[in-house]
Image 1 (cartoon, one colour):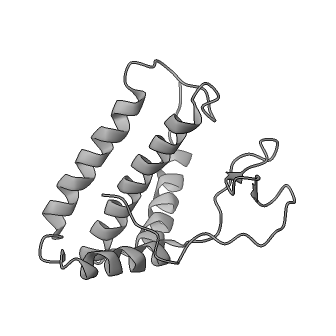
Image 2: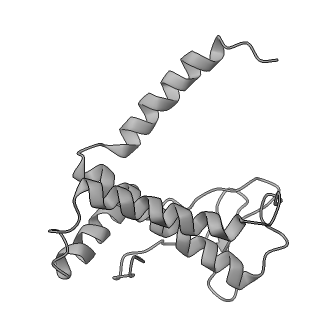
Length: 149
């Protein structure tokens, strides 16, 4: 299940400094490798939640998008994502050996996973960004006292 663009998307303010992604001549986002990878600021998780809600409601799919069904769909999409890495061995960060069609396929599968995750969080009334902050704080506490080999 792919999220269809409906006029809401990632905006680029034209800043090509190393702190912000830039676009190439094909409109593809490029990131400065020296600074590391960063996401664009839009769309937010809330934007994605809203777009997916609209997409689902337009098709009258809400009756099917219950937590259990969304979880099973999410697991299926994670399986499709895993297939892209199956039998490749370890891959380098940034996937330098992947072709553009392979990268686009990866982007689509990652998007499917994110879309289902956000919709599942919505149906379970979990504020995902706040849950992430709480979980990271908990991990920091747990792992700060852990003894590593």
